[in-house]
Image (tube, rainbow, N blue to C red; front, side, top):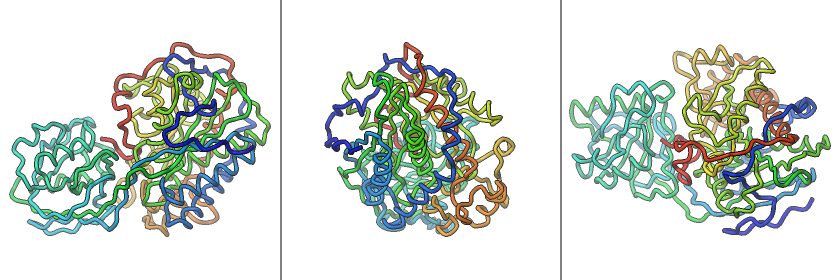
Length: 548
């Protein structure tokens, strides 16, 4: 079918092709549906073929598919072309966002007492939306919790203005990850006279690695801000307690305002318009690489599900609307723009939203969003528990273990749950460290050569690619991961950053849930807002980097 005219910047979507539920809309309940034919048709091999195409697009466009770049535009064209040929009603929704990139390699050195040069993207990472600067100054620790508290979020370091009551103007602030947004810590430090900020990870299990922070597109303080590991932060804090520590920070960054990009929406030509089942994944990568796992896997899986539904001639009872979001890595901008652009009338049509962001992690786990909140205390809107149950029941039926993951605002479901839309989805892990217990459930590695191993060792790096060893990953680690999974990381004889076993299992679960809800004839009434924790930062989420 012909592509629908592009929706202009700032325009409110005027067609049923873009619609969203309010807190009063019913969520479709899950009823038994035979999804075996669709699951058999959706294969990891075909999804990997799509990922190879996304890699080729990145290779032809400076190694990235970030929103606002030619690589992203080419990704949109690739997905849209296949969907149009399959008969979907395709709409491109244009919007503007503020982009961020580094113009040169950052620097972080301990000048004294122990001269040390820290390695970029290994020992430290420039915070997204950091300002530029080249400063050398004494380090001053701010309200640290050392040793760290037993639970994540025990530290309020830098969260209150009072934390900086004794801060010396012209120093560099050392703050600890904890309960508040990174931007709050950095802004408070700047207001207190800091000329730079170092944010180190908090220290609990899963919060020790080098911190990839984002400050959000609204941050505009002209100082360098970097994230580092708990070990480096703890060492610097100990040295500062014993005497003066002088450090050097240098960043050169560029924030471009009002950069054009787009979302892609594809809708089945048949199905009830008042019970729309929506499934989404962000199509953009980070600027540092091609984003094959994050989030090529979610994007390619949705594409293959849509294509196979069309090829099988499935006519859903309820309209199915697929979405590929732009500028997720800039702060969930595309999905939030979509939600914000809708009228009340349009907002009555979507019954639920399913999110797929990173579903082929090389050292994977099987995680389901905690819709009922019983694991993390943050529930989705009414109906989200039903979605969680569909995924749990499916994995149980396949003899596969799964675990809940929190609705913590790290992906595109956030705009939906904040608006009271029932939501759920799948995730296979990012920078958190895999435990021995999880290895027993899912295979893989908890450690390699004595060091902990995360679910995705190439998360937000150039090596998130179809050839991570070529692109800078630890060759020994990736060979060990591939061996641990019996060759499941290979495509065309090359080790990739995607685990095809995970991809097959999660794609089948995604196809099962989408078709189950697409064919359902019943509904769950009385949907409402998410719990206060889930919705308290509407419009302020900061993408798949840790928000805090």
